[in-house]
Length: 280
Ligand code: IPE
Ligand code: IPE
Ligand code: MG
Image 1 (cartoon, protein in one colour):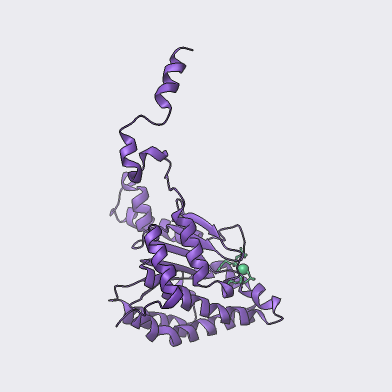
Image 2 (cartoon, rainbow, N blue to C red; image 1 turned 90 degrees about the horizontal axis):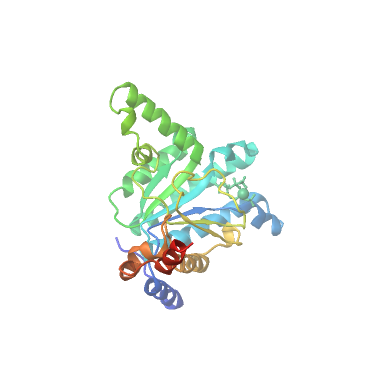
């Protein structure tokens, strides 16, 4: 199995990105705007979902080439079950077809497939195809592709609370052992690091019940492109933007590892301020 290599201009873009800073270890994407993309073209909403599969293929491939370790795609939310029955059913057919059509190519690209969400709520044939794909790709060491299906952040947290409750009752854990790390370990993403970069397409400024616990310190990037139009050049723009950010995790700039030498000198202006303050 060998990863398909980027070519021509694309290779240049990727090389530039890899030189200009760190590539996020985990990118999560709220793939939104399929329906509007189609309606703008006078097409039915499903045509947007259909074209969205091509964006998935392009983004998965580019992430693999760039050495991104985890890519989580919000493909179907708990709330999306409330859409018209016809759209839900077409979406499930499309998901099944995409899994079938893409499996070999994903495997060839060393992708490891995972799924998070209430998988048991999906049609049986989709569940079977997912399990088959995950089994086939479980030993791959390239990109881990996490599909969020029938997923919501509140579902995830509620599920985690049930698990913790069960293990407390059986005596496996005690109250004082409940830490943030322990809670994380009961979530569907227990083996996946928190996202570094969260992208939402179609310009919407909301989280829509995605990974609400896990994105506590993710960098947010909103793209105006509808998902079917979002391709690797847009991904590169998002990563370049991410590379310009300073992630402080509640601290001040001088404390960050990359600013290590600065830690030996007093925090900028702090000493002077303390002196003048003591005269007050
Ligand atoms: C995202 O596109 C795909 C899913 C939620 C399944 P939408 O279907 O939400 O498209 P818009 O947001 O209505 O344009
Ligand atoms: C979020 O998109 C869910 C997915 C992308 C799967 P929605 O289109 O469902 O979100 P809202 O309804 O606009 O918040
Ligand atoms: Mg939408």
